[in-house]
Length: 93
Image 1 (tube, rainbow, N blue to C red):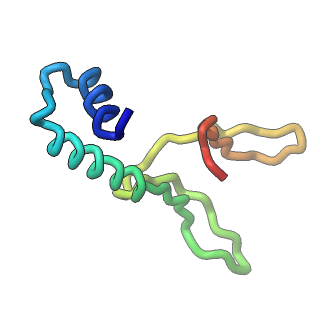
Image 2: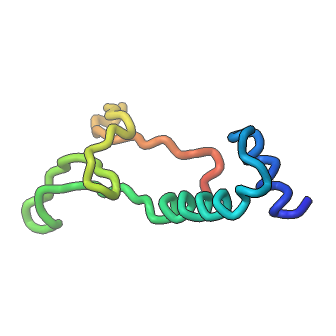
């Protein structure tokens, strides 16, 4: 199966009304969405840089400086508090 055939098959499942004549639009849209994903990041926000007085955690923000709720605060048996962040099973290292 070629990449173009795969694109037609995948898009047909997502948009049954889209025909082969929409391939260029679909390919452009997929590339645009991929660029958004490739440029996505999360900022861990602190009130100051590292130094003699340790920085204080403020929040997590997305690439548009919107506060996000990601992870879960957990107190470990050793007494430390951690912000536990889930890892996707298909993550690459």
